[in-house]
Image 1 (spheres, each protein chain N blue to C red):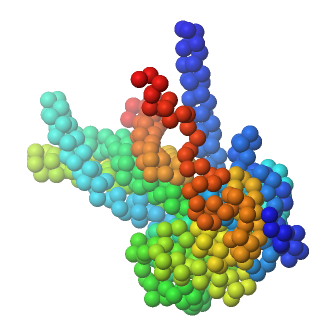
Image 2 (image 1 turned 180 degrees about the vertical axis):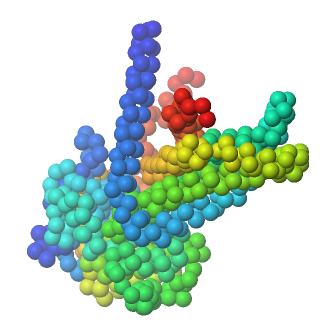
Length: 276
Length: 267
């Protein structure tokens, strides 16, 4: 495993220490994971579907409380926060959901204005200006009047991004931001994640299984498998990792520690070859 | 073998009863939480007005047309019976009392459950399935206060108004058939109705019924939507459950309320 690590850095905006979590204690989804997200960085949490990376994101959001260990986010121990404390913390966070999660009954403009209207008592002219600035940042100022159903997948993702940065968050969370995007939209989202992170002075966490693409945008990577962090390091260290699972995953090999076949009884038994 | 089967059936029955009680408890806690977090819906009343439009105004056509036909059928059937006893001039009373006491609240409630209740469940369920509810939580906005409470109060306010309009349309339908078509004396039709229908005993009891049905249907609709598994099948099942449970709840509550309101009196 690579040796470079930002863990336990005092400037970490998220610090997860020895966290375990599971709906059923007998089958934990997260097993004793530790990770640190340095302020100002773009960090990727990568791995196969079902490896626990989205659960880790939900622990950071405060949606799940760890059954063991501690999760410190923006200086708060998320396990001790009550409902109001959690909401106060989330006002400093933004999240881009896998398919955008735009409010389908509101226009693009109203979607971006939603957090401003809910949390700030601003004059309408100022809301107008702020929304247009956020939409301009994602290149969709001209689409302000459209409804979400009139947008392509990539445009919807960009509007959702504008909405998630409406309150200038300190921490941005991305849940599979590249899923189902065409190459152009994909490139736009990759560029926006980096640009917005740097221009807002924010910190970003990207949860994804699109490894090759994500390695181009992140500063640091945590690689997860079976609820554990099995590798971490810079994108170059991950690309050159000798860890068999990481190697198979990054290079998209069919053969490796992850078998092609889901566990099953002997093939002959299923075909009833013995009976014939 | 027999004991084993019996035991398995008993366990299944026990499991069903336990989960039903658990679900009822969850729904009650949900209603309590909803009531406590209704501040936003009442303070920002335009959110509730938008829901009155969706649940109430958009249900107007089906309510008015149904009311008209129910009133017309009541007049036909009522005249058929009343004229045998030489009491055809009491047709107005029969139509009005049937509508304001029973058919107005009950049929409007059943129509409201199938038109507005199912729409509320499907909308909230789909918002959950498409992560709109999660997105709201991540924006530090309480979805029960912002999404559920306005829909609940919108439904509760709309239902008595729809029931009243149903009754009004029904009485007009009764007038069209009874007076215009059959030829009952219009003076007798209206004056007997005016004399026999009591404000407190008939109209207010009808209004109370429609308020109770409005609370029951909208509570069931918002709870089923919020509790729906976030899948196409989950939302579809929840929508069906809203219509079935609401309809049964309306009929059962109607029996209880009628028993409480109209027994012992001779109005």
